[in-house]
Structures are given as C-alpha cells and as structure tokens.
Image 1 (tube, rainbow, N blue to C red):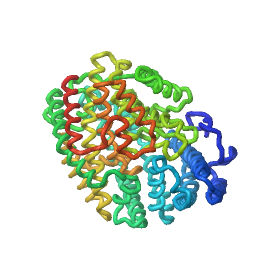
Image 2: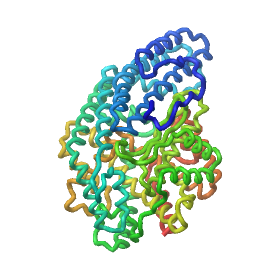
Image 3: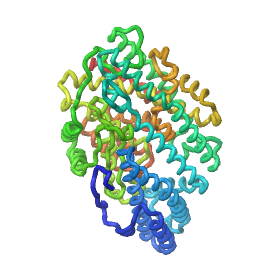
Image 4: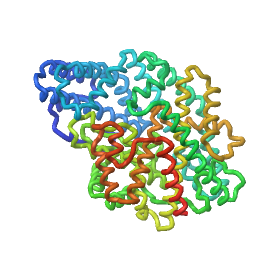
Length: 576
C-alpha cells in the first residue's frame, strides 16, 4: 500500500496456517480459512492439538487485523485521498462484517469443545472469559449496524481533518492554529481562538447530525443484544468485569470533590499572574508570566532524535525499541492538511510492531504526545513473544497506564529539549495538565452516561446537559458572549463519536500512572522494572493483577485519588 509511511513488514513468525499468497483484503479468500478451522476443531484429539488450533486461529485473526490497521493508517494519513478511503471502506463494509459471523462460530466451537476443560485454567482463564463475552453479545442483526456506525465515524473523521482557516495570509489546519494559544499577545490569542471556534461552529449542524445517527444506531445495537440502553451494553461490550457504571459515577464525584478545587486554585493563580480580571478561554494555555511559548523543537526529525535520547537514558530495551521504529519508518508525526486530527498508536498485529501517528506543530504538548504514544508502542513491543494473539493486547485501562506513566517517567529528562528553567516550566505545564484533564474526563464520561440513558433526547436537551456538566467541572472561566461555542465544545472530542465510552479509562489509568511516578520518586530502577513487568503481561491476567504487577493499585475511589492529587499539588509548589 503505497500511501503507508513504512514499507513491507515481514511477519514476526513464519505463518503456519494462513497461506503466504492469501489476499487479506478479499473476504472470499478468507472464508475458506475459517471453514478449515471449523473442520480442524472437530479433529482435535489432544489438548496439544487444541492449543495448536487456538494459535492458528490467532494467526488468522492477526493477519486480518493487520490488514485493517494498514488501511486505517493510510486513510488517516491521507483523508483527502479517495483511493485510501475506498480501500478502508471496503474493509469496513465488506471484509470486517463478513468475518464477524465466522469469528462468532469459532468462539462457540471453542467454548463447546470437550477438551477445553482440560486446558490449564491459569493460562486460559482470561481467554475463556473474553471468548464467552463475544458469544454472549454477538447478534447477526448488529453486523450491518456496526458497519454503518463505522462509516458515520469515518465521515466525522474526514470532516474534522479537512477543516482549515485563513490566518495572517496563510491557510492553516485547526491543529496548527493551536500554537497561537500560547502567544503572550492576548489580542492575537483571542483572534486565533475566535477564528477556529467560528470554523468549527460552521460545521455544528453536521457534527450534531453525525451524533444523531450514531446514537440511533447504538441504541438499536443495544436493544438487539437485550439491553435497555447503550450505556449498559457498552460497559459489557468493553469487558468491564472489574467495575460498574456506579463506580464511574462515584469517580466523577471524587473528581468534583478533590480535583476541581485544586484546578480552581490554579486558575486563581493564573488570573493573578496574568493580571486579568477574568480568565477567558484564550487565557488557558499561555504562560501565566507571559513568557514566549516553549519551543522544544523545530522539525519533527528533531522531536524524534531528542525523544530517542530520553529513551536512551531511561532503559536500553526501550531505547532499542524506539530506534527500531525510527529505522522502519513507523512514525508519522508532522501535522499537514488532509491528515486526520489527533494521535494514536496502532499495532500491526502480524509483524507485532507499533506505528505512531500524531500531528506535531512544535509545542510542548507534542513532546508529551510522543512520550504517551511511545508508552503504547513499548507495550506492544513488550508482548511480541506472547504466542496467544488475544494476550498481545491488554484492557484499555491498563494500556493507558503504559502511555501516561511514560509521560511522567520521561519528564525528568526534558533537558534534552530545554535549558533548566524551561525544564521546570515544562514539567509544571505537564502536571497542571494532569490536574486539568481529570475534570474534562469526568465531563466527557458523565455526558456519555447521560446521552445513552436518555434515548430520544433533543439537541437542545443535549446541549443543556453538557452546559450543566461544564458548570460542575469547568472551573472559573468566563464564557460570557460565547455560550454557543461552550455548548458545542464536545464536538471536538473524537472519542464521543468514534469510541463511545472509551474515555473514563484515561482517568482510571492516570491514577495508575501517578502511582508509577510516585514509586519512581522513591526508587526509579524498581519503578521502571515493575512498569515493564506489567507491560510484558499483555492481557494474560485480569485488570487488577496487571496494575498490581506494575506496582500500583486498581482503585479509583476518593481514598486513592486524594493523596495523589495532593502529591501533584506539592510538586507544583516545588516547581514554582
């Protein structure tokens, strides 16, 4: 696929089951392979033969998943290329839907196999649990609905990636415009903010329409599976075996009680330092002492090289992993027109290699984003030797510990980007960002709880609920005269459109990451060793055990949150 930043990547291990010549984008060539697996399952006479069958099933799944990842990468790197979109949509509309019934059939065959009870329970317990969940939730009538959901999500992605503005004589993406929010000139910040906001508001009806379609589709999917609302279905579908919707609501309450007051204190100090009567939306990213923006790098090649130095210092294994990604061109970091917004790490499942996508424009947050996505990449690399495909990925709540902890573990080494004074400033920006993100996570998650437990709501009701949550979690920012923009802020949160209910994980994981960070302040070598040991488990153990192996507790109650927020606040005082 010529649009990919990287070339051909060999499989991590030679294929044993999938023919080397198989066209993984042709559903007609894939179907006989599933049928052959069904036939072979009945021929398994020993536990060893059943385990071989499981591995061969995983080989096929990894090969198909990698094909989908490659097409998604090509499409997001080039949202303006019709051929890339066509290839991706073929996978979404033809390949993936036609494979779902086959995966369901294989899962049922496995669960009913007479030898399954003889498999070692400690090894296959999580695999059994997850396979049973797939069978429990599968509904044939949901396959076309899920396909349509993916297509609507792609339209949202395409529109978001296409937005540009004319600013100071140049056409700029909305991502590129973000850097002006760090400029000391308040009038300039306001001009840039209003221009970007007005551009988004022009598409407000389209964004609302996308969500209307998605909400309707998701409601049908949940009803077909026997659920009264999509929230309850989503919690089950996401495999949340270790916490409930009620636990998330308590987490929201804890954030309101412990974090929002700390954020209000930060905002009061910011307002005082800036010498303004009220904080406006364009006052939130600028340095409070009106210093010029931090400029950690010019070109993305520089970002790569300096980040490499951080990993060189941290650990030889991490260093080698990042160097390998650079050599294989598994990084697409620079922002450009026609590129989808945001950042992600995608694993090429058959090669067992990670790919990092982001939109760097030369800001401190780009450094944080690369450290974050590198944490995901290290997680993927840590499980390369895991034979079982299902265990080469972990629950999202722990995947985000991998990424967020890497931001914190890398922060003491920011001197590769800055002189000492700016290192302290950058670390302060990062820690303040952690405090600020908890209320935003609570806002987005609580909003989704409301959205899907109030089916049939109007757009006006939706906006009113968003504004109520902004009042609860938004801190002391003056939005007077900007009420329409405030009510539409959620349009830029792609998770709401593309990955429903995938957001509270960031908050849960941030608590794990802060515990890893706290451990590193006591014993850096032990903390890093525990972190890597947790990553190496992949998804082979239940979520609380993954946290425990990484040296932290799986708990997001107020009792865990309060001392960690206090620790961050104390560190901010030190850095000040």
